[in-house]
Image 1: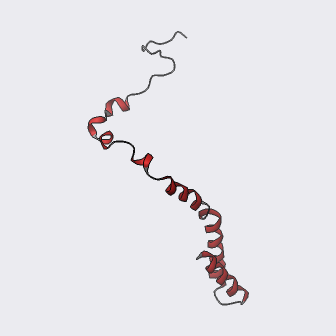
Image 2: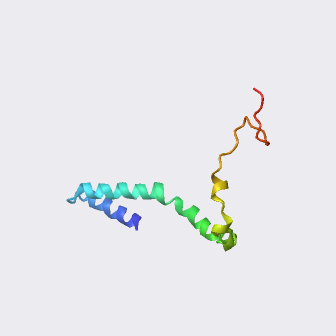
Image 3: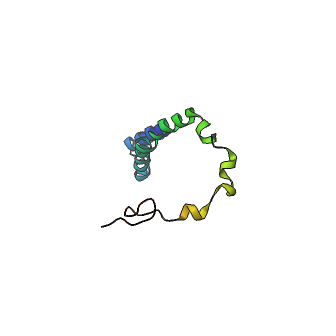
Length: 91
């Protein structure tokens, strides 16, 4: 689709058709599409081919509220100057 639009824009520009800025913008948009968006299609296609096994692996129960302890998850981590027992190391 973008290739057809770019080809048509080039023809119109070569014919000095009215709306030159429009056709130049079409070519710039096509260049953006081919340089930025088109390369992503290969990675996205590979993602689709990989399937959903990894995504669907966790059991539904893993996402229930009873499995989450917010207080524990938000507790600050010990600083590097504290040992596992919570005592400060001598400086």
